[in-house]
Image (cartoon, rainbow, N blue to C red; front, side):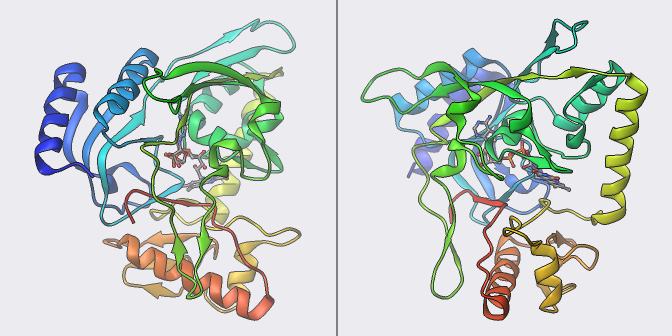
Length: 336
Ligand SMILES: Cc1cc2nc3c(=O)[nH]c(=O)nc-3n(C[C@H](O)[C@H](O)[C@H](O)COP(=O)(O)OP(=O)(O)OC[C@H]3O[C@@H](n4cnc5c(N)ncnc54)[C@H](O)[C@@H]3O)c2cc1C
């Protein structure tokens, strides 16, 4: 755990290297769609792969804790925030190869905004990621949880992921490797990148968050390639518009991190939470959405502890009533 002096040195060194993309004591609440979470000692936006490699190498050499995040749309940041460095992936470039062929290839940086990309692809008549309309994360975050909607997901079209491995032994520097889809262990809202962080619940029904690795996650996605399809732009735009409207009709507009729990096999977490009468239940300023029971919303000024109290209550009540142990889709991040 860095001391106050270490933190000051860390900030000064990073400021010298990365300029005003570096901020001290940055509230994580500003960087997550739940709008909760205490400060990160140092916050930094990483815009280039070589900056990321340099940052990971520095963190290793100097023993600075480092946590990588995307848009913060699938995380619950803790009220304590995060010691050390929180780095937001801002590798925002993308391009198409063989754009005129039937199967164009998309090469996207991990920081590319998925919903913005989906709109841009629709204008060009490129199909395959329409399900991502309105899913507010980055490409990297989407790969981590094999994000999806409308019975489609990342793994349907992903070909490879570019990954920075940081946990080599001793002084071994971080190294980039390209992994094929088969190596990513994709499943429903899971991949090799989440496998080590599955959240378990203790006997009192409280989520137990395992301690952070020194560099978390140790395998950092810097980009991904997808094989997509060429289609009539009007038809792609129509599917995007349909998916967006569906979201507007079914999901709450307030601050949230989307679905809190994964759906159990053959059922829906929202249906189960509604069936146990918890739609609209509150803890502090957090509420189980009256519009969709698998969303917890921040009605203004909620804390992470408020959200955790509702998570624990919903999970316990569903378990006691139906014997179904819901799994978290949202990831608690930071120091718990
Ligand atoms: C209103 C709303 C609706 C949503 N609807 C959907 C939906 O329909 N389907 C769905 O699947 N999800 C949905 N989500 C959840 C979320 O948008 C997705 O999971 C998204 O892909 C997360 O991306 P992110 O960049 O925000 O990741 P973050 O939330 O920033 O990070 C998620 C996890 O991935 C890690 N991570 C992020 N980037 C990287 C990287 N480059 N390398 C390694 N690890 C990384 C982080 O450390 C963290 O553990 C919704 C969220 C909201 C708020």
